[in-house]
Image (cartoon, rainbow, N blue to C red; front, top):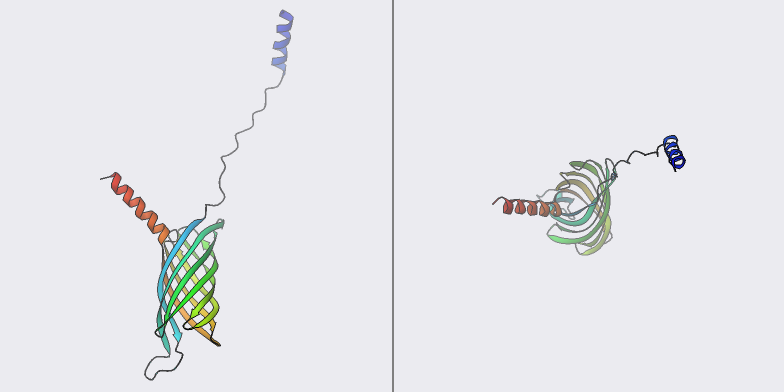
Length: 192
């Protein structure tokens, strides 16, 4: 029995200690989750008049309202993609136009400020004629996409003619605004 015990102690003393590998670092997500957006935008559209009017400028101004559902998706440290589907309402020379829009904007920056080019396909009722075209714009987005500013151009082929207009839009992300309102309401109920 003593020999067996001595042999066991010798084996334990001679055998190397089991290797313990360092704990792996905690798993980090490379990129944040996509953030849904629901943009409501207002702005102006300026286009050449379809027919000259005596005493009036050569351009006509109009109102544009956009409602677009999308998501901000981070694909690299400072690179985001912003796909959107939306509806656009435009008034031009007293006539309304209703359009479907679809686009994918590459954005560069951080969550606090991003800038990018936003190409969109535009199709719909172009003031009485079916129209198809493109809208492109330079977009700046600030504070988790809460506020976006766009300066752009829209070209439509409708009724056998080319329709162009310049646009300036200011948009608010309703998803982020609703989240902020919910947090403020919760904070208010807690600290009452």
